Every structure is written in C-alpha cells, then in structure tokens.
Image (cartoon, rainbow, N blue to C red; front, top):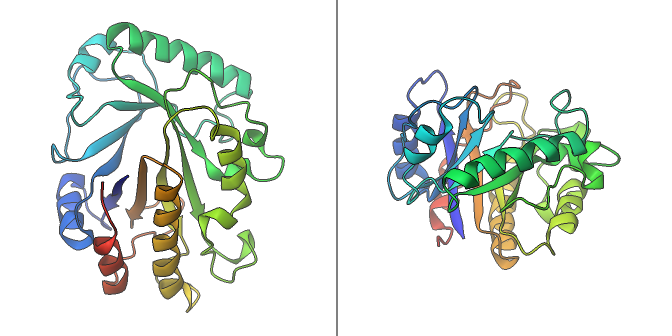
Length: 259
C-alpha cells in the first residue's frame, strides 16, 4: 500500500519545498494529492519527486485536453479524479447528474490515453445518515478506482471528546466501504484529518491521533487499499489546522510500512 501525505506549511507558497520537508520529517511519501481548479492547462507541472505517485483532481476536461494528457508522465501521474468530492452541496443537482458528467469526462480521457485511470474521490461527511452520498448514487460503476476523504474535527461529530475515532468506527466510512468493496476496483483513502491541532484542541488529541492513524493504516492495508494519504496542512480553507508536526506523530509515520 502506498503511504503518503499532502504537505502545506503555514504561510508557505512553495508546495514543492513543503513536500521535500515532509519527506524528511515523515519518511518517504509515496503518494500525494494535487488539484486543478479550472480548465486543464496545456501542460501539467509536476512539483513532486518522480518516485511519488500523484493523484490529480480535475475540475473540468475543458481546454487543451489532449496536450494536457500527453504531458503527464504516467510513471508518477496515472490516476485522475474528476470533480473532487462531488457529493458536496451545490456542485451537482443529483447523483445521476454527476454520474452522467463523470462518465462523459472519463470517456474523453480514455479516448486519448486509455491507460490513465479515472476515479472518484468522495466526501466522507456526505455518507453520514441520509446525506447525498449515502444511497451510492454518486458512485459511477465506470470509475476505475474509488477513494474517500475523511475529516473529524471535534466534539460535535462523534462521542469521542476530541474527534479522533478509528476509521472502522466511523459510520460514514463504513457506509461508503459497503457500497464499493465488492465492485472489484482499487480503493484508497486520499485525505485524512483528525482532531484540531493547536489552540482549542482536546488535551488527549495528540496521543490519540498517533494511535489511531497507526491503526487506520493497518486497517486499510489489511483490507487491500492501494493508498493512505494524510492531509498535513496548516492552510485549511475551513480554518482547521491538520498539520501535526509533533515528534511523536512524525516518528510514528516514519515507522509505518511502505509498499
């Protein structure tokens, strides 16, 4: 299983340098995430080492798609996500609407470079209860892989005082897993954040985070997942700091098995 992270240091504007720092602090990062927010450019600029697999999210397949796809070195960028976390509010009118657009985008990509995998990175929050993803309507059967992003920030989200709960005890993740596990497709965990870092954090959070992340990586490996990637970001758009740069967390992450 590929083990990795996205690394964004507070106030930094150089994600390549941040990632290099992360490689030293957390051990070899075999997989990371990257995002394009508009029409595809004519060329993708890979800021990461050749040994790191990049799972790249596309907002659109508009623009010079052929030029863009042929600029990808599939030794490091072979998995694309169309419309990151499509279950979020106001992106699509329904699951069926997303699936139609996903299937059309995937067909365009495959017509140019059939070896590239095109998958879905789901929003874990939206598989809770009766939220939009819980019925499976966003999970196109045409997808080449399925991944999920999962965040737990604090006391309002579960019975644990600090929001740090093992992945196999999160109902939303188990709901998603039940929907995709028998489809014969690769599964992954592409973003993880657990418990606020810094001011306002529950005192138990740091030690619990170390224990639970180690548990979750072992669970994902045992269930055949192809990747696990933590979101080591101090620049969260939601205002949360997910960057645990403590010595204990770094030592735990360095010690986890790779490959």
